[in-house]
Image (cartoon, rainbow, N blue to C red; front, side, top):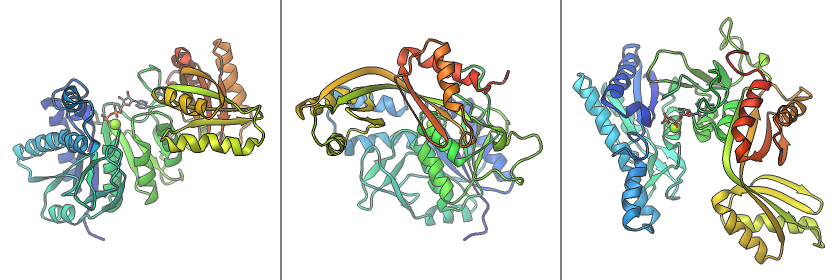
Length: 415
Ligand code: ADP
Ligand code: MG
């Protein structure tokens, strides 16, 4: 489609937080340029909650005045953080003598649905980006935002800048999409919980989609899904070091695997992810006449109320599922109004053991249960698929559960 060698480079909030760090960001962009790439840079807003230019800070400001500001207006507000950080990065590059241009989501041709706060990218018109690249400019695009066909500004929800980067990578047929962050790659567990967690060298889209979907916030699952559609390699790496990071690709074949690389076949379990703050609901269907229809009624009622349910187990006489803690009261109210008996258990955590190699191996579930039982951790619910085992535990047991599973499957650096 074009003779440019396009590299998408996405920098997260912590990477652009200080002038020193932005200098390191500029070094990564300039290095890519010197290697012959045309960089398309995607930036997140500067810093985290409490920092002056962070998105959460803007939200706090406006909600402090009026908690009921419409989502449309909030999206215009939330799109400002990336505009600020984009202008700062472009200025940094220009100050170093490089030609650069800043494009907002709309100017970059990123069209989305009109679901404010959680819009989906539906189409990208890359002409403006390409014209600027052809003119020799470094293109900096504001992450996390787009525009509807009607010209309304939208944002993409948490982790949205990752999605912007992947969608641009696909639309521009990039050689690679690099997600720069504050850790040296995707690890076998959240390094904030497991100090012994190890960087993964090469992983498949499927494994990382699961890990991300089940709570590892290092990359957004949608970004993985999008890059996979066109088989564009994704790499997660650090802004602050030269470590190679984690390469995410399709099947791991001999070409992608260098000597000594940890290959998929060697790896039964890839990593452990966790999600906290869910409530388990147990709905009694024992006294109902037509059970299958009743089960369906329960889930239809939840869907109608926009309550997303997870971890569904249908048993004779009982339906178990989880919802986010903050939606539990709403869910219970609806089900009580329908006449059901309900028990709830708030503040649970879902732990996911993910591994592309577990499909044909027996005894993995047994090992999961054994590791938790040895720690005296009660398993409230469990389920499995060909590449994931899920267990629900009390939130107070979450950290111990993640650590003991990580150790039991020998995922650490010491193992
Ligand atoms: P960014 O602002 O660059 O998008 P994020 O905070 O979204 O960064 O993601 C990076 C963070 O993800 C890391 O600092 C780490 O604390 C956390 N994290 C959670 N699970 C994992 C994991 N399995 N591997 C690496 N990092 C993880
Ligand atoms: Mg992120």
